[in-house]
Amino acid sequence: MDTPTQPLYLLQITDPHLKASEDGELMGMRTHDSLNAVLAHVRAHHPEPDGVLATGDLSQDGSLTSYKHFQARMGQFACPVYWLAGNHDNVAVMQRLIGGTPAAQKRLISHGWQLLFLDSSVPDRVHGMLSDSELAFLDQSLAEYPDHHALVCLHHHPVPISARWMNAIGLRNPQALFDCLAGHPQVRGLLWGHIHQQLDEVHRGLRLMATPSTCVQFRPGSEQFSLDDRPPGYRWLRLYPDGHIDTAVERIAPGNFGLDLKSGGY
Image (cartoon, rainbow, N blue to C red; front, side, top):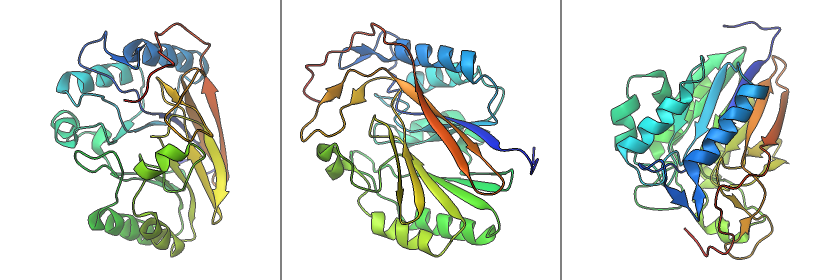
């Protein structure tokens, strides 16, 4: 798979919030239907990625059935799909289904890049935290491949965002993360989900990227919980051998998935 003249071509699918019932809703939105619509757009425009990054909140109810639904939908891809845990996920239940499979791998090394998949979930909490073992894994993995460009992936946001109500439920120990990354200049960027909105900026020389959910969207610039009427989406990325990242978010056409914009929380 290593072809140093070609980029590594990836998709990010995040925060589908599936439930056991295929009629399950989140703030009125039928999340199975919205995920199906996103995947239809992917099939039409990005059908053959080298890998798919599923960056958490794959389930809303943590049920084995919801994860089986997600696994079935990911079957459209011929490439590996890497699962990360979010705050709504049940890690033990996830592992019952994917343990020992490529979906449970914590890193991908290809095309001169190392991608690292961190678990920032905290059982029964909405905020994120990177444990000492996750930080040690990150440090050791980066030290092992100093000549590979690196992209670090997790669920929770490690920097403040404009939807200020979400900052209390982001990563609680971002300084530990950035302190670790500071010792490894080959790291090119961070990628996450959780915030249900698009972000692409530079922080401490790192490219920071977040991606819309495949279901409901949160409104940027909001002081309190607020939904956005923008449609679901996903991200594609091309990681080049020289360390350059080319990426964009794509959204599906607006559709009637039942979203209740008056919802006060979830």
